[in-house]
Image (cartoon, rainbow, N blue to C red):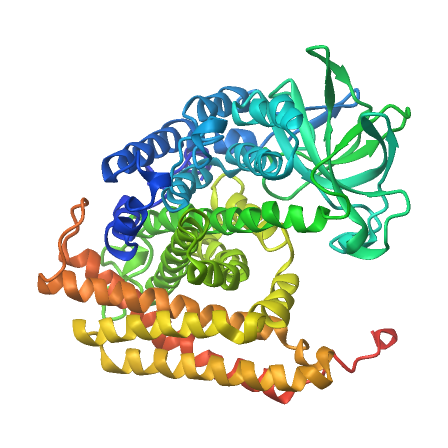
Length: 609
């Protein structure tokens, strides 16, 4: 046992992190790259340049990031003399990502970017996240903060802070949450008092990811605060650029941003989460970004980008654990087949047991369905942002809560199955699944909890513009249903998906009608509605993957770049069958809960608990 556990300190397999064939299938056969190629913004790119980016990401993820995952997870950041020190292995890894240009890859040439499609960038970063999500998140957060200055900051702020962030010389954060406010941004109390060319900042922030470290010389906090006399609630919140060190006469000067504590997290342990205090010495300078009282609107740009990033983190974390458990199931021998009569017969690999295959297939359905959805949402973002496609914007807005929450919630379940397959080794820290399970739990909390995503979806997004986005989604899914029929996909699968689309439309209309009189009643089962909606959206992904697989097996689909044998497509068909036949029927129970307004917790007096 001792030698086995010692050997298990590293992955038991050269883990692929993400299946290259899946990435290439998504790019070559699910998304329409020709539509992106037709947009001037992406004129410098073609399928070959995409492959170069993907190969760079694969290499650094597999050869550099993943081998250091266990080491970094085992030694989280520490606070020493008011400064956070991270694991020394992070420094060369972060530098490698900067060197490869990941800090600005999707951004315009004029700010140092490569104008890479987000659809391609998302798939590339999925490898990095699967390899070591803590390392990548320094890059992701920095890119989001810099993008805020790019979109709304003054020329001086862009030169002073945005450009160094895109170059990887500084990192960035979004400093929203406060101890007394949590996710309720309407209740933040950080103040900004005008003083000449800047504002004097006072307040505290909590749970600030990447809020302090020793990787770069400076950290730029995109901070929500209130001007004196600002209206109450969200209408009075403004956005400020508050660096850890301000630039004065070309030099970095301490800006009175103090680290008052470090959060000891269960996961993402290479990325510090800190408490910040602004203005303890009355010398914290902040600069208004954009117009006063527009902070929430501006920050939602970064938050929506971050929600897609969290969804990618979740899908990637589920993916790396799935591939680990798949290989473990292939090499771990235990027990014998049910038909074996000889107790002395050779033990079989546990993948031969049907229940283990059940767990593996469920992981596969969650991982690959989620990754396909995230690539699709990123593709809609490309079309909307750089092609002015209003329909793509509707679909992007509608699907963002699903893209964030499904991979996080179902990904946690998938990670738990990976641990379960490892059995007793699974719950030991010598093996990796327990660490990925810890990482995964954070994804359902980051950037708005699942309950917040649910209320956003049902209370706002499905009803926006008279349900136009929901109608567009229905059209998208019905188009795939038609393709599936033409490809020869099992008719009962298609019928189930078509029925589900009708159910979602009818249920949404019923809830909206009831919500006019009783909004709280409408949202009572918002989380159930989100799960129902997500289940249908993932069924859509799997039905298209089934259609592609049928076409490929029939020889009517041009082969992509990857070598895919018949077994690859057969596995896709089985995963599609699993999701549509075992998961999709569950929406009827969820719909009944939404319709009936079951109120066990709604009518519960908190004092009774």
